[in-house]
Length: 588
Image 1 (tube, rainbow, N blue to C red):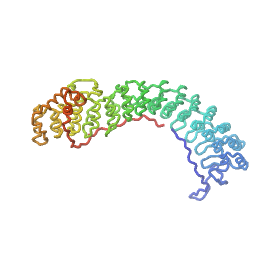
Image 2: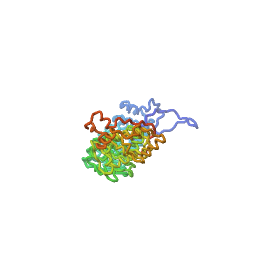
Image 3: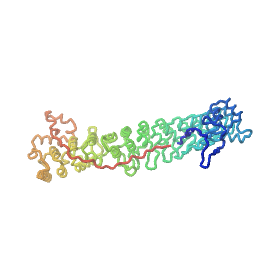
């Protein structure tokens, strides 16, 4: 949008200019160098500016020039028009041009250095009597200024309804563009929120006039929340689904800006919430509301938007946009309304695998964002790269967050293909997720002192980690902690050979008990663990209900087993950063 600011008035310098070839007067048409100006304007202009009609008439009778201009190119008529003095303007017009109507017409249409006519200045300031007078004197009603404005556009911009009505009745051109962005008077009236003027203009203007971004006046009303103007335009027949050059609709831009009343009005009057608003991927208004966190608008759009955008091929779930905009409330609302936490794989369209992968990229450091917490709690699938984030570090916040909302199933479920199940209010790990957890854990043995106790307390079956790689690379304390959870006397021959080799190499100092058969108490708690299942034993209060003395409760839950201390600092793996998605925002 063009901004109309008059240049600051400059003091006039009437000294002779000194040229290299000698001192001479510079000839400027209309300047009277017989008079020394005490201010920035001549005496006639000063009288017109002040509205002093008596003084003005005296100066005119004394023969003072009416053609004298100041350093802005203003004549006394410009001053009278800008000041709103119809009487002074009348006297000046009567005196100007003598008996020649052609000269008088030329005078009334004389322009300042900015291309402003007296009619423009009067209209800009809302001086209705002066405008009426100047039009009778044959002022050019459509004269353009240097910056493409005109009397009607200036009156619209200032909200001067009576002047607008007069100019429209007198035949002012209403559909001409008046800014570098090609805005019409109707665009500007809507932008300023002058609803009464809009009511006048919709009767004579082109409702579908487009600027250089193919934005209509109705689009402007939707973008800036001009509800009254929007309703006037709709009632007049403006197209509620007119798309801009980038395919944005009024509903999309109104949703982006959070104008709930305008969104409701557009939807009630036929706006299509499922019209694609981007050439790159099917962007709907719901995506804009989610990205910018306008929860009220988002709730309304959820009810009317086709759910195919949730999981459909070649679609993009609004969850991606909510995560991209760091809008936890939007994420929570969408998940609560049944949108899938996994959405669809958007690798081809947005270079994103899932909303969770985007959430992780937005929060590469701890603590993790609200979006990560919400998605994990809702059961978002965890991929190998997510387990790397959780296990390849000495920080356990992410692993604790995952285990807070996930239930580790018993080993026998690894061979079963199951849909999403819940156990005691938590999402049960899918078999594939648990397999990837174990694979990453065995690759990140150096961090086992950090993650091993947490996994065991969460109910992971220890025998799943009895692999050569674990026994070969684990720190001595970690290895002892692992063996405390199993019957070390029943290890397979290959695993026993690994332990013997480490003992010979003095890279592992076993607990004294490991040289003997496990005591009966240890065998008993292993049996209790096997019968109940490590998940129930470690994560519920079932042990408190067993018919055993309370002193055994901690023992049965392995609370007597000391945890290993971490002593191998490692840096986090370098993860690929994912660029944020394009924000659909218009700059007018």
